[in-house]
Image (tube, rainbow, N blue to C red; front, side, top):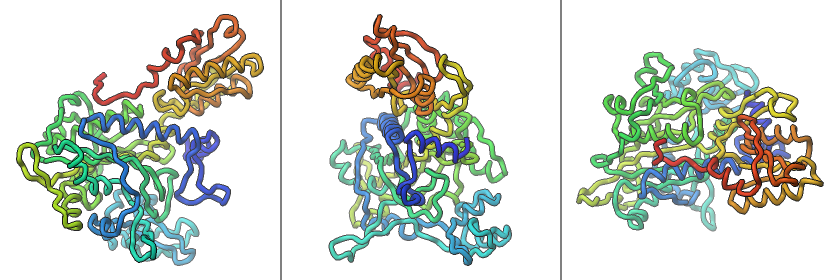
Length: 505
């Protein structure tokens, strides 16, 4: 499905649409409708449940979205958080230089120096993407943070957070006192981040306001033990940096033990494996559509020692795109904030060791994965169930993520509507969201629910009034069976359970 087709479906079904749409939209900003918000929140809940489930010392916090200037100065974002911008001297359109290079066949453009980018733009004679003129300026760094006036007289400077991670670093000392004073200690944040993207594009992949889910694990590198044996049977699709340098583009299935033998820390490999399990077991992405891509020294962020992106092969966007990542940040973050604040952020562990904790960061793009769930789980199929006369678009979302788990469809509005409403209420009272679809033919109502990803449709008809049974239609198989209304919420409930990391099956 093309990006335009997927976005059109999302708008039609109330998943999302451009912000300020009646004014023509606002570039890089999107509003979630009821279906999209329900999906987004379930994705967030699933992420929190999975990764906080890895340890009893991992906590969810909600730090402020505004950062004083001293914080972003210490973190390095004032100096380093920039992309290279080029501006057309004819129409004044601004573009990201590395994005233009990638669109014209230059791979690995991210991380190149200004002079390297400038030379490639000239060599390729790349035109302005808007007017077509070859009149691009010399690349210049453009800081991506939004600054705001702060305080009653506006003399102070603050910034909307460019990532959620800084709140965890600022909260570490307090949480050390609040918690059990032992490492590893994990602090997770799910919330908004803000980046003044030069040229927002690819819908939810380059936004100016977006939602991140990030877990910062603070640990002692000499004693961070992990149960690597629990993931020993996985085969992780990995594309190493040295393989990319040789021109290889295909990921290789690699056992966790082989990655450790190749020099990656066991704690890093274990969390790679847990990310892979989350994407395949919870989001149900096909394993052959995922890969871990290792960033080289030029490509990775200034604070990272090891950096793998988890990418999904998304047809709507023409190939692999980043959906999550795993960063080993060393002691950079607490070290910089110790210097910037004048506060010693080192701690004494239960073994008596005095250490400035290192950080392992698991990051996840919530909005990006809402898009990917559409890209990887939407399909076109021919007619099947009686009442379906045409091919259908079906969103085969995992049942535990579906915005609406159950739709109750009365065959005749007047005769069967009250019974349908009562049945939907019984589901809601059992904690399972349910809607009632009243309009259009039964086939069109099935089609609507298929596009929304509703796993089960319950049809109320004349037989229901006679014997208390309804037709239960399975979205994926389109099989139908009659079941008693009594006890139906409990019968369907197991389909909506969220997978958890300690379950091995």
